[in-house]
Length: 240
Image (cartoon, rainbow, N blue to C red; front, side):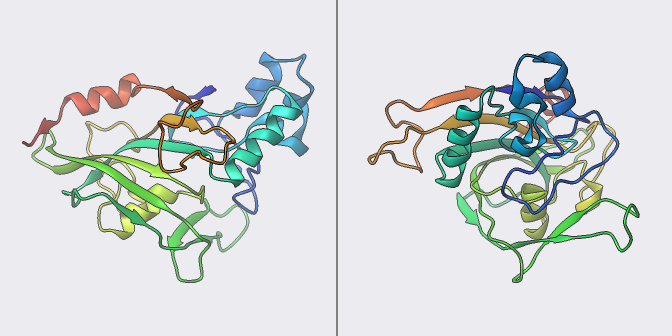
């Protein structure tokens, strides 16, 4: 498990998207190549330098990295068979309905009108690719300026570009700090409030339940909010 700070990029193909999105931030794969010079896969762009999935540039959190080719293809198979669960913590505008539910609107990537003329974005569309985002837990709160906000735990089963941001914006509750998709940008939130907080690898067993994290042999890793987002969360007034 590799910790990706906000502002760093994972510009590799992960099998979920047609192509990587390149920008100007530090590259996680460059760090891996220098940190693990004796790992051939860390120098191999065809195998995505061992990185099994991506995170958006401004998203912090955990990324799975495979130090060998055998573990890389085993993890790719685990993703393809939905044996990897990814959970995120985010803060969105307004009071999101609290009942658990699945957001499954297809997501379509929107390319800049001209190469290099702007960043790629996405939108919910009937022509889009399959995308599933599960709303697992919602807590209502009030921000320092009296803003209505919701602290949300989500799990994603696909990895489309900006998936959580696009799905919640489509619901009318964009992420705080996410001006690209209509979110408010108050001074007490330093960036898009989105953090990859938990990864679960379910065993390759016939009786393993993909909806459960309690299957015998499941491997889990958790990462608390980084300091910048924790300070923002500490400034909220929870509602009973």
